[in-house]
Length: 96
Image (tube, rainbow, N blue to C red; front, side):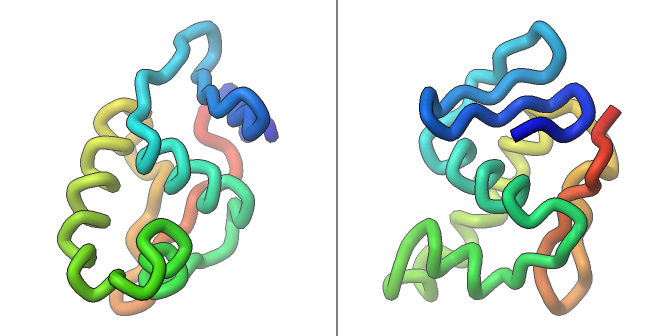
């Protein structure tokens, strides 16, 4: 899937921004793929936790924050992953 200069290849599990391949952890990639698949729409925090960690999501709540911080740092696109206060997160449709 392509969002501006960001390409997320689900089959190869590779994400690239322009010519730069992103060195993402497995969880960061899964998080990016989930948000990219719903680009422009809000994905609830609960849905993300359930998709990435399953029923054990309560214990992983802070883990999501850590992975989001890492993903944002690697993307280097301020404002691309938007926090929708009290609901979840939205990926902007054009990161460039």
